Image (cartoon, rainbow, N blue to C red; front, side, top):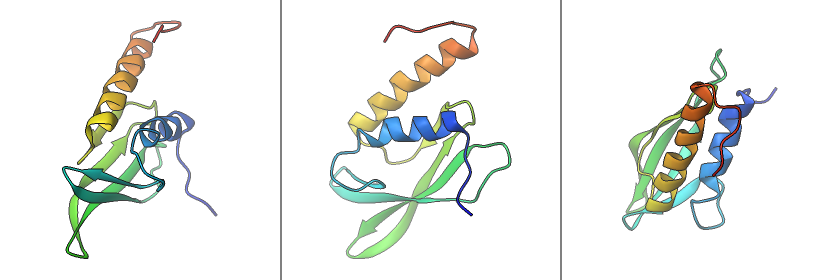
Length: 107
């Protein structure tokens, strides 16, 4: 059995992941330090959650969390690099417009 998550949350994660840089699907560099996300537990409501870790001198340390609501709104993404933060901001603006009742959004 796999990890279940709402489609909008999955698509939001994929959108941010396109801006991480590098070849890894779950790792990125922020302020010269490598970070990665480890998917958390399955949530009944369909939200995506993950723990963020940083690698310093070959050791892993907790660096925050990721939470994406079932409707795709990104509540938190710790240690995101500049490109990722820009993608999160753009994505959340679209989700807010849909929450407000917009039928379509021009990006």
